[in-house]
Length: 239
Image 1 (cartoon, one colour):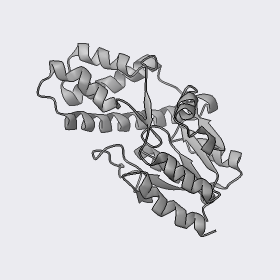
Image 2 (cartoon, rainbow, N blue to C red):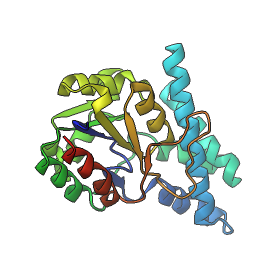
Image 3 (cartoon, helix red, strand yellow):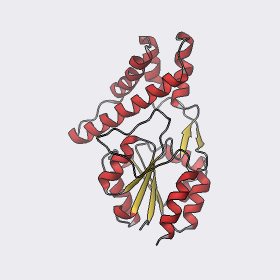
């Protein structure tokens, strides 16, 4: 029985514009004329896996890497993958910082899917490794009202893939984790959902993203949000 649906934000409901790979390409291409966008997308996938593994390590040890060091490590993944020089690496560190202005747009099909789920009477929630300021973006994009619960890592002090962050959302919605489903773009979103005892729909951010073997396959894989309706609506109707 499906009684609620939880969503990630970045690359799931909202898309940064320009995207991180687009920004990296714009920054690095002038000094590296042979650079291809596919190379940057591959590096992005590698950087996301590094971040997931790092946050998992921090969850286990209770020791958070300082932001500046964390961002420098992310930039270093790109530097190694793309053969960037030190100056480009330092520029990437600044690019990834929170102070760098970010613009968002809705993921294609997001509002339509949320409307369909609401019409089915399903409570909806958000669980995201994100900062408080993202609430404004949700308002500006016109989707904040769809959600009965928003759990952000910065506010909760919990970070995916710690399953407790999903359990907190389910507790707030009054739904057992086994009767919830999580939709996210990150391989470690799958790990988080399965660790919490719920199923996962994985929406990979690009074709180079892969779920590591130690995590195991997602329950469902989609490539556009509207595809999720074909999975979720029958489950909601089965009540």
